[in-house]
Image (cartoon, rainbow, N blue to C red):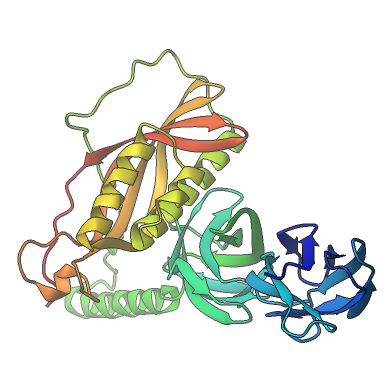
Length: 432
């Protein structure tokens, strides 16, 4: 600190969007008794990011002069905080200078894309797609994948369903689409769906791609072989019968028709809740299709964000999808896992809504049937405990169970307020 120089900045920090600029004014005051000249420099900023209206100023004793510092942040600049160092050096009094620090913060720019390959597919039973994602922004993104069709007729399974994507990088994920009620009769049936990628850091923004699945009946590929084989057997059976039973009068016996067996499907029974609170409900109005779609999307968001919070111990993510009492309960469990050095990962989830009861315009009770793989990683382990197989196994794979959520509508968003597990219990076993 020099007794003869004073340097004052108009702001101690400034936030700039990539591709834009901001100005900071510097006041240089001469506290000495003679005219002085000062050289001004800014350090810590990349080349080309900073412009000075003047690099030298002359100031009379007791007076001050103003210098404008312009910070130009180029497009594509990495998001983050850049501490800058301002120097005002006396040219008349060697060794006298002042130093000030201020902060340049480059704001995060959210820009990413989703592409589906192929855009259209025709198959029986299920359809498989490849999802290509790219981060065109300037900050790392955690992208959560979601799928939705207008009719609500399909499951969407993403592998993986969450991706970490640095700026300027691409990644791929797999998608399997299945019909909730498989097509058994003559088809085909057309499913138009949307695949979306939502960034955890920017939950209000989303990038989407449209896909199409032409679902064919399960037996159509086998039909020619089945019919041909059946006709051949009937012809052979008729010929043998005619040869062995032909009467002397030349009359022919009438063949006996055997009915064809039909393929049947098994319907899983609904899980019976045990020791779970049953809300006292007045007669519920029939939910509209739009409400059902909103609730389904909210449950998908809740499921994926909760899985990311469990994986990364980031309890702040939960505040975007749930409220108390569940919010506090889940935060406490994740914080305890962090203290213990353990975490959960959920690589696969499918669910369907089995019931939706409207308690009021801002509250619903929804029950789902979920198939889930949930893996437990012990302290210091890079693989789940069902691969280590030492001690009790907490992981489970492809477990189907029921769940009930109480959801509330706040500020235009549906949040999960309470969760009940309806069973059956998921049993973990070794994968060796």
